[in-house]
Image 1 (tube, chains in turn purple, orange):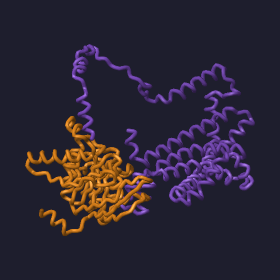
Image 2: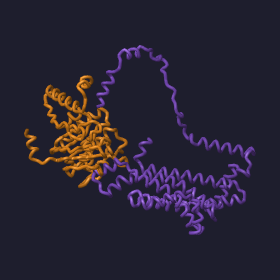
Image 3: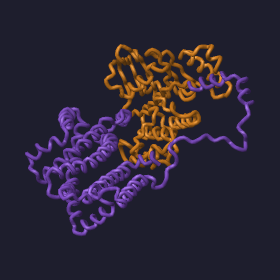
Image 4: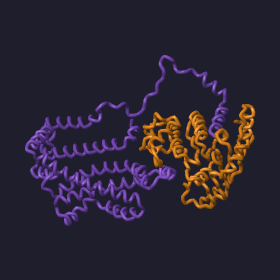
Length: 292
Length: 249
């Protein structure tokens, strides 16, 4: 009975008090009073590049003035020319390609396993009881601690590297998919019941679309983890790849190569994260409205 | 009346006998009986927590695992409209309406239903792009396209602003006149109940304490008198005192 309380509220206002409020002089008409705006202020175009650019400038000045020792941190232009040389003799592309393949296949199997197990655990009780426990135990063991065992089982070849990356990336995808499936809005489940949806229709139109944002969030974590895992496996035992390049450079004291590889890692991490966000935008068009 | 005698010959659409529902120690619905005839519009009033939603959910078959007993005769084609429109955000409006629709040309029928609620222009929009009133209109289209014999409305206009609510009420009356489903409208708005329904029930402590036919006359004067009479009776049965009534209404 909303209108009851509304009329009651209006009746309660004392007219004398109202008159008193009106008799107060209003703010002078020529300079209408504006409140000071709170908050972080207006966004600047390309403002996000400001911080990294400043860092690059400080680095350049430091190197040019000799304030930064070349053996500690090579100058930006040394890194750039080294990069150019490594591209020209093909070593950078070759190692990058090897690393990319490891990361890609590791992530691929991680996605397949994570999504599959997530769906099994998310859709059936028995599945959850069988699958969720072992995965939680596996999650409690640091991935790096598994490497010695994996090396004993699978040697130090490509299989072991891909498997390690897959083991590390599947966890967040599993967790987010499982969670997305399990937290399907109870209101939508009720709706599906009133619409007499079959099990298949319920899955296709309600459960899976509801779990998709969770899966994509898991994918974003998984992609980030795949580069992390790559660094780990390539620095343990490798004869090719970006991690191997870094290890070799450390042996010869080539900081410029190390910096270059780090820059490549950064570029890979940022661009793959961007790619997943792009896929997310395409896969969830109904969400874009919120951002606009 | 001719209409009533005609209805007597047909079996009721809803036939509830001795329905009881419990939550723990509390008996929410206490052995109630109810018949709703074909095309009859019934409003169910009650204070918060009086069990009116529990009753509606029992009719909708949504009260899994709530202990209780009684006989519940409902038709196969039952549609529910909730207070929130409950449109799937990842489906366009027309896909929401046609979701799970059986039979031929579901999409055409969905578009036709959207035309009935004057939402053709928004058929391809995402639900989140619609206003609250438009969302509820889409929900109405979704329930009516299934040609229900029984339409259950659980405070469908509760979240709408007063102006939108008025227009939705008029639209609902039009649609019900055209499709003639039996309707059970759960609401806490006494005026809404009198305006829309032919018959108003009041649920209190698990039982129907009021069951009255509204029967508003067509002429303005008698109509207003009858309206005030029904309103006063319903409000007092809901626990509003004469003193409170005099002060605000």
